[in-house]
Image (cartoon, rainbow, N blue to C red; front, side):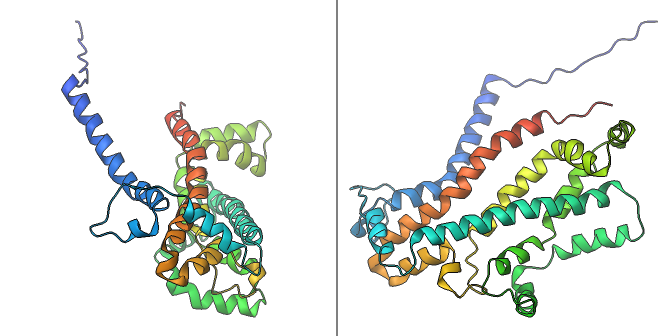
Length: 286
């Protein structure tokens, strides 16, 4: 007796492909409009910024907004390079530290059995529900009791205390077959080596995504509730002080908005290739 296997071939017509590409193009352009508009505004002279109805494209492009920002930063008591160093230092330390902490916390929750595991897992999920406004006062009290107010740690440590990264890493680690970890242990790898050489490469999309979100969040964090000394303040704080002088500095404020957007965008452009490539080749065969 012959058994016939029928395979349905999935294909789209030329019109279907064109419609799908057109839809993706429109969706991409729609999401890119705010970014493009912000960049164009930074090149508009002051009289074009307040036109009504507003114009999307710039008619008389100028670099006066950026040159005005350079002149204003020379009047600051602390050099702009100090603010930039503070932001870069806080963002890098927080991002690297948070990814490491999230990985170390997620690995036993995902791949080990111990008493209280279910409770800790539910606690991690429950903690995601709390917004930063709810925990702001308790965090400040803790930082004050520890004597860390007006220091880098007052901004770094609260950012590392969020549970979203642990939840994200745990979800990815749970998809790793137990046979792969057992093979690593049979080859003599301990828990540390298994985590860093086997698990972390396999969950690369998770920690790269976590890097992007963490860096973006901490880069835009002014930390004004903790930092009072001028030499500890961040770049967003300094630039917001420059742009807070009213309508006369509206053009400078547009230039500042573009400058603050650049680091997260560059990080995303650098990381997105690795994320897409890893996701495309993350199939596991037993």
